[in-house]
Amino acid sequence: MNSRRTWAAIAIVGILSVIFGYFIFKDSQTAMNMKGVPPLETSSLGSQATAIFRLNLPDPDGKAQAMEQWRGKILVVNYWATWCPPCREEMPGFSRLQEQFGAKGVQFVGISIDTAGKVIEFQKQTPVSYPLLIGDSGAIDSSVALGNSRQALPFTAVIDRQGMVAAIKLGRYAEADLERQLVELISR
Image (cartoon, rainbow, N blue to C red; front, top):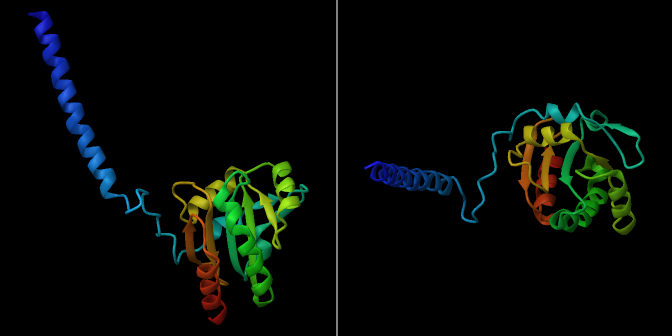
């Protein structure tokens, strides 16, 4: 009799687990887009990008750089890492756009989630025309405040001259798409 109760309890727990698991899976599927990735939070669009301007991060040489120095510019902040292939792929395009639009008040800044040594080695192989900074936990938090709720890479935020989040992109940012965004912001 005891073993029947034990088996009955195990069967009930198993059935409840299957039912519970189904509803969790169903809810997670509902929240996913067509590629199986949960949609990016866009609630930060149009909000103040205050967290980014509070950052004071070292460059690869160890010199502190205040993000505040770029307030008033169209700021393209790219969170990346040397071990991230899509991050590395988009950086030459970002360099071209920095050269093309820098004189018009656009400033790209790369915030690496890496060590200074790895960033220095990367710059030797792939020079970029904009500052690269070394991120810390505050940098990760600032990416979340900008809309990167999954804390994934690459993540790019475009901030307008008034310090408002104009665009965010999780994943590789196509050069042509970003160029259109910048042209629009420059013309405002």
